[in-house]
Picture 1 (cartoon, rainbow, N blue to C red):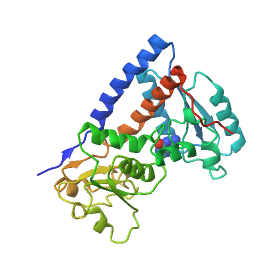
Picture 2 (spheres, rainbow, N blue to C red):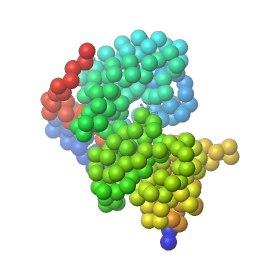
Picture 3 (tube, helix red, strand yellow):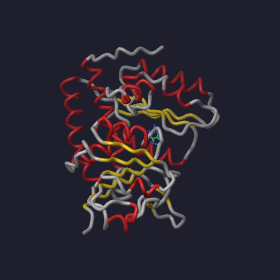
Length: 293
Ligand code: GUN
């Protein structure tokens, strides 16, 4: 039997439709247009595409957005000054610094300059600490998107053995924490884990985010597993593929996400949700105990 394909485009479209109504309500009854500021430093081509897609998605859902572009050789202080001004700007509810930053930047100095109530990426150390302790204010967008995909397919997490392959701050680590919070037994591996298949074969839910094309093959997956492929890799011939070998896993797993059209469309969707949520909270006057130092 062939796995049921989890269609990220379809789920993203329905989530966006729901949140568009929330944005409209906020605009019409609250007089507040959700606002997102995106900071990009340098000319990384992939980052430029991501930022363009984020801006387009904002305008489609009714979020005001503005982009602050800095050159590759910008001093960190210039970016910090920009963030401080955005923190004070009442029209901006979400601030996002596109990663990676050039080498002269200290990621944590920059990200922790963002007001926690505007940290729609969920990367501020406060928000990561809140996530660790089960009090997340903003869920990081990609793992949040994975959770929504599971929920929309009524795939239960509690009591399941979830194996996460990948330990990045953006996906692997927060993904493991979110699954743990929802009652899964979680194993975290990396692409370097010795005898990786010994672990992946135990997974009821397998999430792969390593950036290694087709790392996971059918013989590494338990029959009936749910396999979520976060990878997106461009092969030398120009085609895209995930970290999961789609063809061999499809006949073993019960559920599988495709690449493209799987997790990818969910990431920006959850960013839009977090921005609207931030605007709703600001409008409702919800304050955080945490204060910027
Ligand atoms: N670079 C790659 N993914 C992301 C993301 O989700 N947020 C930001 N800010 N930068 C990224």
